[in-house]
Length: 336
Length: 249
Ligand SMILES: Nc1ncnc2c1ncn2[C@@H]1O[C@H](COP(=O)(O)OP(=O)(O)OP(=O)(O)O)[C@@H](O)[C@H]1O
Ligand SMILES: [Mg+2]
Image (cartoon, rainbow over all chains, first blue to last red; front, side, top):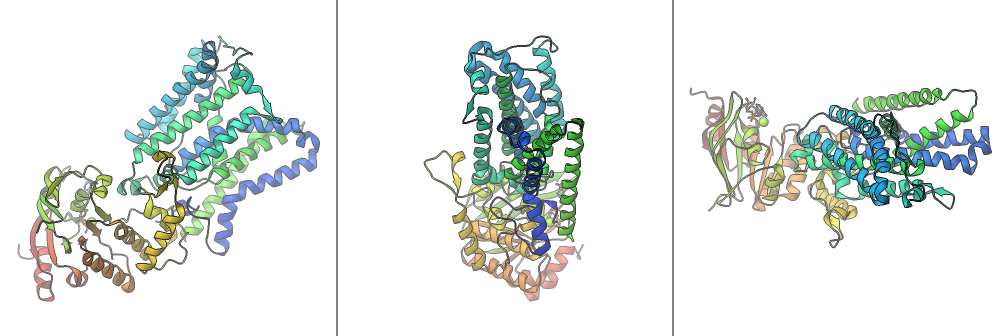
C-alpha cells in the first residue's frame, strides 16, 4: 500500500518522521538546494570573478529563466501523475509563431503563439484526461506535431522571420531592470504565482490528490480528475509557449530547431528537485533548485576551457541517476 | 416513514457477469442496515451504484421519496451520501487534513472568484484535529502522510472522513476488516453514534457478531439477488448464515 508516493509531504504538511527516515526525507526535499550551494561555493572559489561576475551570473539567470518556465509547468504535470514530452517542440513552435506574428505588432507576436500553444495543451489534456490515453504517447505525438508545424511555418527552416527591433516586445525581451533581464523577472513572477497556486489553492491541492496512484481515490472522492488533468497540460503548454515568446523576443527571431531536448532537461530539473516521477509528491522549490543546479553545472563546465561541453550532459546525467537512486532507496526503506 | 434511501429493481451487468439482478433495498433515518452475502455476491457493486461509481443498467434510486440519478461520486456526495469504500480511497501521499478536505476545501475570501480563493489551512487543520480527538482516532503525527500509517489508522481516517461530512446516508464497505479489537470497537461505536444522530447507515460486514450487535435489519445478497431480510439476533444467527451460503438450495 505504502509506496514511494508517501515519501514527500503534502502541501499541507511539513516533512516529518523519525530519525534516519526524517533525515533522508530532508535530504530529498532540500538535497538539490544543498548541492547547489556547494557547487556555487566551489565555482566561486575555483573561478573567482569569471564565475561570480555580474555578466556571467546574468547569463546563467537568463538561461535558467527559460528552463524554469518550462519546468514549472512540468512540475504540475508530473505531480498530477503525468508527463509532458511536447514542451520542447511547443517552445520552438511558439518562438516561430511569435516571429511570424510580429507583423501584427507585439499583440500578434504574443497572442498568436500563446493561443496555439494553449490549444495544443488543451488537446493533450483532453486526450489524457477525458479519453484516458497514456500521457507518454499523447505528448510524444504532439511533440512530433508541434515540431513539424514549426518547420512547416518556416518552409523547412529556410524562411526566417525576424521580429522588428523597434517592437515593444523586442525591447522588453532585451531590457534590464537593475541589471536583471526582464525575462528573468517574468519567469520569477510566474514561478511565485505558480507557487501560490500549487500550495495555497484548491486546484493545487487537487493536483496532488489526482497524482495519488492512478487517480482512483480522487475519482471515488468526487474530484473532477479529468478537468484537473486538462488544466495541468494547458498550463504546461502555455508556460512552454511563454518561454518560446521570450526567447524569440530576446533573439529577435524564431528558429524551428529551438528547444530540442528541453523536455528532457525540464524533467531532469523536476526530478533532481525531489519530485517523484510517479506523481503526487514534490515541490516547486525543489524544481527551482534543480533548474539552477543544471544551469550552474553547465556554466562551470564551460568555464573549464579544456572540457568539451558534452560533459555537461555527462554530469547532469550522473546527477539524475544519483537522485533517482536516493529516491528508490528511500521508498524501499519506507516500505519495510 | 419515507426511507432515506430506496433502491428498486437494481440491475447491473459486467460483461457476462450479472452482478446485480433486480435488487430492492431501503434504509430509514436512524437505522443501521447490514448488507450481507458471500464473496462476489454483489454487495460492493450495489453500494458503488448507490454512491455514483457505477451506473445501474436498470432500476431506480430514491432519496427521501424523490427519484435521483447518481451520475458521479460527486453527485452522490452532494446529495448527502458518504461512502467508506472497501479499498478506503485514501490519498496516501497527503496528510489527514488534506484527505478530509480534498474536494470540499475551505477557501476564501468569498468575494474572490472560486479559482482564486486561498485555502484556509488553519481552519481545516483545526476542524480535523477536533474531529479526530472526538472520534478518539489516535494518530501520533497529524502531519504525516496517510500512506505511512497503520492499516487500522488508515481505516479509522476513512471512517472519520465519512462521519465528518455525513448528512443523510453513510455507507461502509467492510469498515472493520483490517482492525484489531479496540479499533473495531471504536468503529462500531461510531456507527451507533451515526445512528443516534439520525443518519441512515448501510454496513457491509462478514463479522456476524458485529452485525448482530449493531444492525437493526440485515439484507442478504446471493449471486446478485436479494434472497431475504431478517432481524439479526443471536437466535437468528443460524438462519442468516444459511441464507448467505444458500444451505437450503
Ligand atoms: N468493475 C467490475 N468489472 C467486472 N466485474 C466486476 C466488477 N466489479 C465487480 N465485478 C463482479 O461482480 C460480482 C460481484 O462483485 P462485488 O465486488 O460486488 O462482490 P462483493 O459482494 O462485494 O464481494 P466481497 O465480499 O468479496 O467484497 C463479482 O463476480 C465480480 O467479479
Ligand atoms: Mg466487496
